Length: 213
Image 1: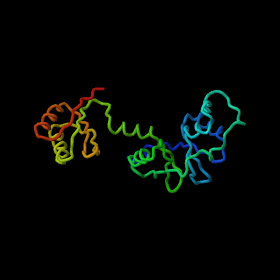
Image 2: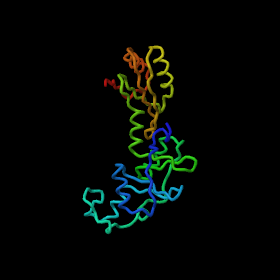
Image 3: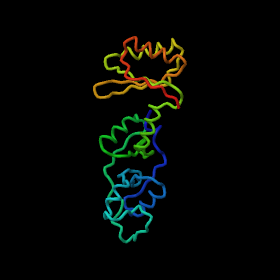
Image 4: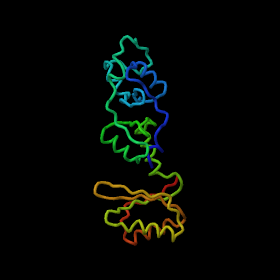
């Protein structure tokens, strides 16, 4: 899955010279937590809820319903935005976006395509995507394998599901420290036979969970 499939195309932008109050109004009206800062077609920074909060005295919540005197505005978006901004290309794998956010301790990335702003991907988008990848909403069985020293487990699973007339709904592998793990969702009336065959064949099955929505 790539970033373009998970991002939001309806991204709000703001110019660096815009007042913080105007930025607050825009964020409040759209119920969003970050704005991409642009000058012309160039992305110059990003400003989020926390950046704006830090610009005001600790006893003032600029996002509260209480109207504030605009003459007390501490500055413009350009004075608090983060720059240079970290971006990601729309055709990059979504896990690259997750890794960038984790390593840089940020909650969102502007997405570019052909050197132009194409959207934004946030930690909420990543969470929803990974939830779709790892969860299954129909009746199925979730089997976790340890593939660290047992690559044949994948071939065995495919062969066994086919022979038992089962549906292999999804299959995901990932690295967990020094271990390489895999999670499969299988559906069918002979799932119990599959689990028994896997255990008897000596493959490293970590757990089996039956999902009954």
